[in-house]
Length: 117
Image (cartoon, rainbow, N blue to C red; front, side, top):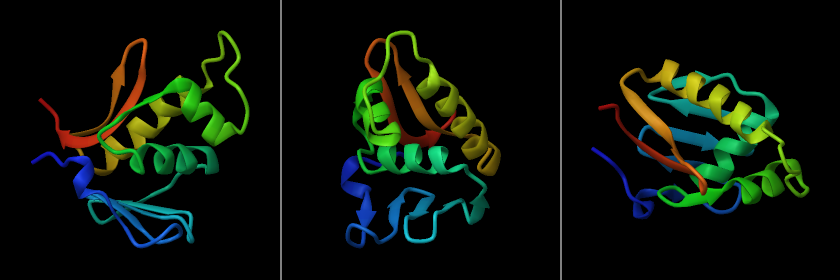
């Protein structure tokens, strides 16, 4: 079962963000996937939060970099791609058989938990 942006639930700006089987607790710096706590670095956690709050929408690499790193994305910088790769591995390890982050080449990334094909 896939979820749309209408299924993003948040309890205020600092409350938990829930999308499908993912729960993000900003106040605690905690991410839970399918009932399992996922150990994330600060950047990974901020990246997940930035993507989840825009669940179902493609978010440009430049926007993600600005949100998470706090500055403009420099030409040739692959930081976003490296962190998305790490984040994907951790999320998919916590819930095998599911895909969470989808690449839109030339555009950015979309957070939309769905069963893997």
